[in-house]
Length: 276
Image 1 (cartoon, one colour):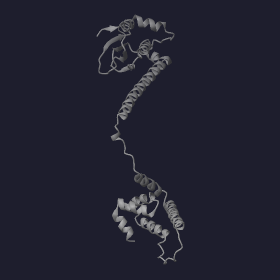
Image 2 (cartoon, one colour; image 1 turned 120 degrees about the horizontal axis):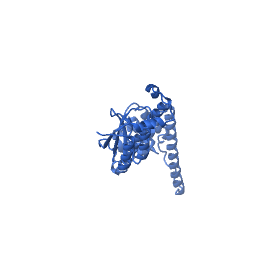
Image 3 (tube, rainbow, N blue to C red; image 1 turned 180 degrees about the vertical axis):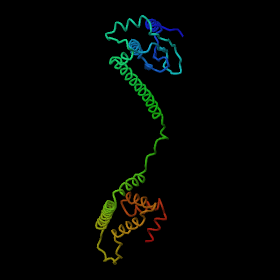
Image 4 (tube, one colour; image 1 turned 60 degrees about the vertical axis):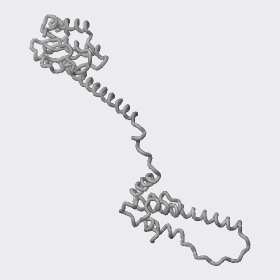
């Protein structure tokens, strides 16, 4: 492989105008990382600034490619800085170089340039990571938009929503559950009173003088029925039926509706309740 001076390398770059460039040392270790798309101008400047830094090695490998893929070999040029041109650059520098190379290498300006190069490499590495993540995000958004309605989560029924609601109630303990039972009891009692009031109005509107009716057996107290159902539900704690019973109880506005739900979901439970 032919050796090129820094000026010859610049002429080659102007001639071919590579879109992706990088710089390696003599051991093929990356010194200046390959640029991202449409960033070649800044990368050319960075590479030539580095090659003009006093105190660096004499030999580097310049890599030029027309696409960014790493498996593409591209063109490589050995840059030899041990020539008159480089000596003139060093001589014209404002740095007063010592004959001792160790002193030159430890000069603050050299160390500062090395730190700048390291930080620029780190920035480019993170830019590349961000670019890859953005591409992955675009792919995920595209896949999500292609999900069909059949693959979407089915809408939960009222019964399932009630089960979730009562499961959350159970986390707050027995006092809150007692309040829930009391509210449900009051709601059922109000419905019973409304029904009884409507029946009394109808009977009063169509009433005619008639003989005093025979006394009828007193109906079972409505509150006692509610209490009996709540005590029965409490006996199911720790079983698979407990939350199911709570859900049906929560969805009922009357005792008759609660029994209808029992009949639809588990006839055995209805038989057990009726046997009490």
